[in-house]
Length: 99
Image 1: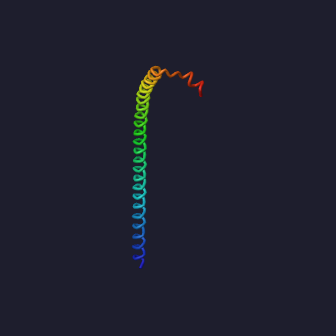
Image 2: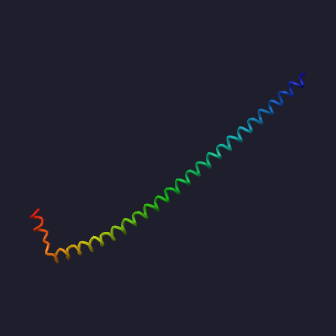
Image 3: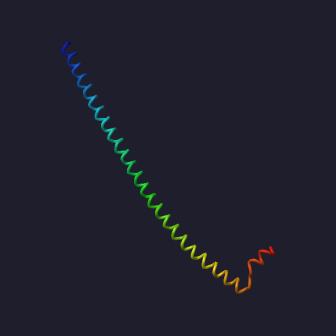
């Protein structure tokens, strides 16, 4: 009977060590998994930010290019308008007074 009790205590001790070892392993695995997820989120955030900087540069360049193009186009149409008005004898000062 004493042998059975001692054997039972040995088995319980073995089970306790096994449970503790498994819990330590699970905690380590969970910590590693959490670290991997954090690193992945960090990489994704840096990638999104890099893409946004590229888009910002693109839109700035487009704005500058379009502004120059439209400015030239406006000047061309203003010149055409002025030439037509002169040819038709339209005087803005007299139109403004009439209005």
